[in-house]
Amino acid sequence: MGRAVAPFNDVLSMLGGSPLVDGLAMYVGSCGTVAVPGPTGYTLSTVLASRAVNFADALDVHLVDQTTTPAGVKDPLRRIAAWETAALGYLAGLADSSVSRAVAHSRDRQVFGKSLAQIETVQQRLADAATVSDALVLSAQEGASGLPALAHATSTIGSVMSHCHQVFGAIGFTLEFPMQRYSRRAKALASFTNAWIDQRLEAAA
Image (tube, rainbow, N blue to C red; front, side, top):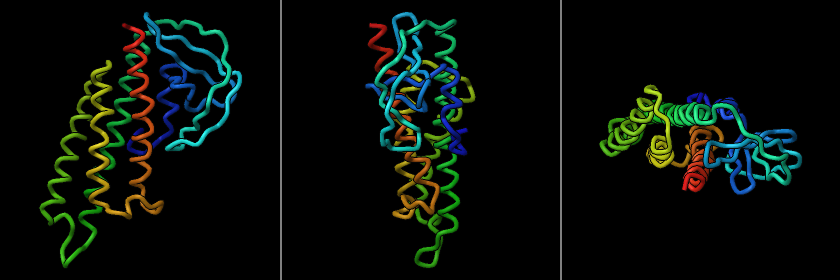
């Protein structure tokens, strides 16, 4: 899903709703559902009132003004584990596709009579990005879950995007090239996911 920058709400369905972070939630609109971690799992609430806000990516982010009384969910820890695995897989897909696109661009782009792929510093950047990306993909394939796995994904995907953007140069930030879609989505999701991690740690303390 991450490889194609598919809507992230398919991943959120495993949790039953969007993490509620500082009053913000993804894909909620009217009658959407938000999730809040607790000591024994998490609770879900239906959104009664919200306002759309500008955000880093097209995640349909809303500021939630009012919700119903929180309700518990069945098998919360299993659902959390499934969501964390899916979120990690989505981030791995973003990283993997970004590296593939950067490699293809380096082979096609000609500078000083040769392709970017023939320049040593470009090769080093691609190798560094691929190393991190492969680690994320392997973690996802092994079904890794839990806060350490998720935290590792959110803390390392930024380096993949940085290396790939260095290969693309300024054109990687333009709308004509898809690279910006991957990096914007990665940054936006990392913010929500990191906040979810913080909330779970606070709830467990």
